[in-house]
Length: 179
Image (cartoon, rainbow, N blue to C red; front, side, top):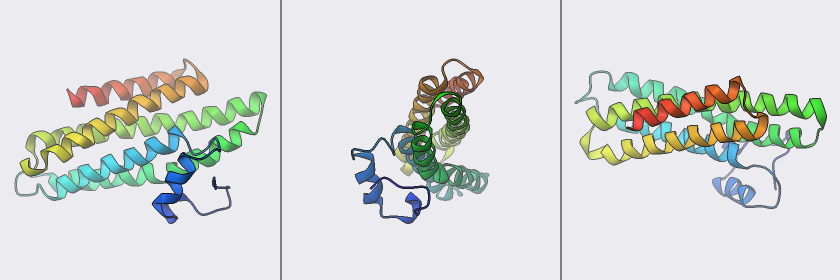
């Protein structure tokens, strides 16, 4: 049932629709949409832990607010990546290159957001609610994965470029936060 640009986005559909489309025969949605979902979930976990860490961490609500902002940044990419990649696949030459560059720019921003999620969640691993430490650690690990896969997708889309360097730098930041 892969989405057409005029249809509702995945945020308005049952989760099963995304699962079915990811596992379906169509070329989209694929890795870009999947890592956008994972990024949103990692940010959500970080927000949850921060909300539940106010008695231990003075700036817990500020961390929660930022994590929620980052989650909202990932959400529209779930559908936009699928629609954009489908459109890119329907073109050739310079038009395809421009579309892949645009998608890669979004992936680079997503990697940077994932690095920030990893940093926030890492702070929560150390100073947040210890009962939710594993949730914080999960958010860090998921965010690292999002940043790393995003960097690889950019390499596949546009090769070595400024976008690729930005994405690899974001992945390095995320891994440093995990360390």
